[in-house]
Image (cartoon, rainbow, N blue to C red; front, top):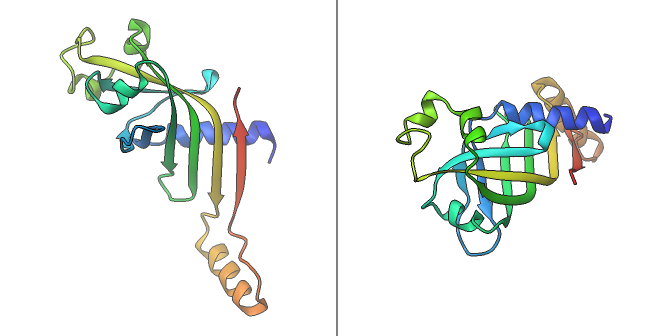
Amino acid sequence: MTDKLQEDTFWSELGKLNAVMVGCDGGGAHHQPMAPHVDANANTLWFYTNVATDLARGAAGGADAMVCVVGKDHDFYGCLTGKLTQNRSPQKIEEYWSLVVSAWFDGKDDPSLTMLEFKVHEAMLWVSTDSAAKFGWEIAKANLIDSKPNIGHQHVLKFL
């Protein structure tokens, strides 16, 4: 798989997700489920949140962060590292605004509203087969000939 195809697959898979787990490094705070908005051209994920959340406070001055993802069909897994910052850009707030987001805030000018900008620096990905027959064959073959099953691939993508 070419680097370009890996990147395209990566961003496509992220675009299918309703939630990912996001956390800042250090500080002892737990990762939190967040709804991602994908900007593949900028290697960035965007999230709406309240300024009072642990994530927003951690990102206020910029923080190293991690995003963990599991694909809808459980055949795509990823661990993304990068920088998380707050961004209150009216243009970004408008760009991804929806009825779902509006249910959480008192409009686009709500003082408790902020966006988190996660710039992806690196992504470790695991892509597994989505074929039950292939999976079964690989497990049976591995047990018959004392080998390890080949049920997927691991990739590292770097975005700098």
